[in-house]
Image (tube, rainbow, N blue to C red):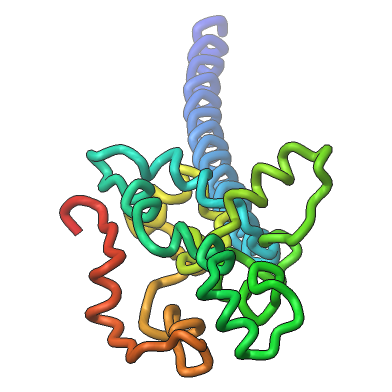
Length: 221
């Protein structure tokens, strides 16, 4: 009798262990699946959320953090030495004032909407360049100073959503599309928004030629 009960318990125990092992395996697989689903939903939500958030201008100094070293192309230094970095200053010259007078502008060119829309970054946008900012708000003053030119974001798009190194790496490896974060793909139309016949200083614009004058590619590209 004892032998019979022992065999029965051992047999029952073996079946229970197998069942528990199966249930544990199913649970673990189910847990992994839940985690994958949660990750997918979170990642998708972030992308959707990012697309719903309007990009804001952050200023070229934010770009300098990653784009100043020689090994990545010294893009910031190349821009800083080029004509775009001095675009607002050109509006303060006698030549610019003469053009403004000829155009019939009542205000100084560096204060005129007709000129500023193509001589600063983000003109007309709440996060873009402003004629006046609160002098006690040091952050606003600093940001506005870095928007006082045709900066990186004038061509590449407002950078608040793609400015981090993590996002730029994701864009570079193709796991995230730049346009979903506001990064603009440069083409002729990007430039002809300002370089067109409406400009009082317009010269024939050939994109392939002019883009070489301000080229600042990453090494190997």
